[in-house]
Length: 258
Image (cartoon, rainbow, N blue to C red):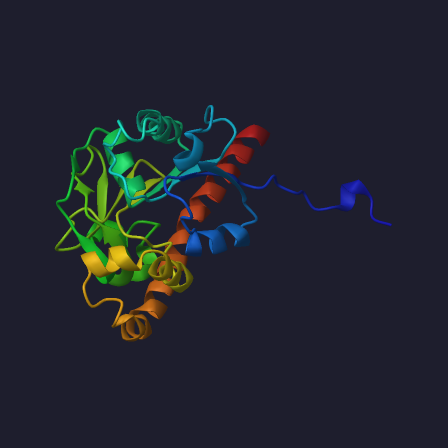
């Protein structure tokens, strides 16, 4: 019989708040990596009820997903100003924050940058260039000088003061940035693996046909050419960000036992 003293120490699971700005937003590669890490996910479906975490103490990390609205649509999405403040509180507390697409635009707003509406339209799989700073950064260091990933956005933003640009493209100069240790924004949808893209294709055919003529007809060929590389890159990015949450917890445990 094994005594309680012989059992290995069991850390509490990571607690991650996920803000869903639009109905049925898939977590894709991020879900797979969070599951690998044994994380607990709490969803906040603000598109439905506008309810956000009451404070930052209940979660180790914050994820803000994409959506069809802009980061400045306060009139039609009245929870946005509070979400902007919440992302800043998480970041200022040293907790890991991840903003994807609209989420990155909300992060940029939270840190005083400008949102540039309609200034950068991209859809589909594209190559992204990694900056010198990005090649040395934990989030993108495994991806080399460029990688293929999925894009779906019309808006972009200026680089927040004090932020480090990690990735860029001809259409959107600020494809990824970091503030501090673990606040990251990605304009691209690294979470959008093959399953998520297929879901979007099925759910939004009219929108896709309007913004990207011919993409639906060429989908099979495009997916065969690009989806595998994008899936691998997306999972690598997801795992890298989650490792920063784990690092934060280890540091906290070390300080507590010192």
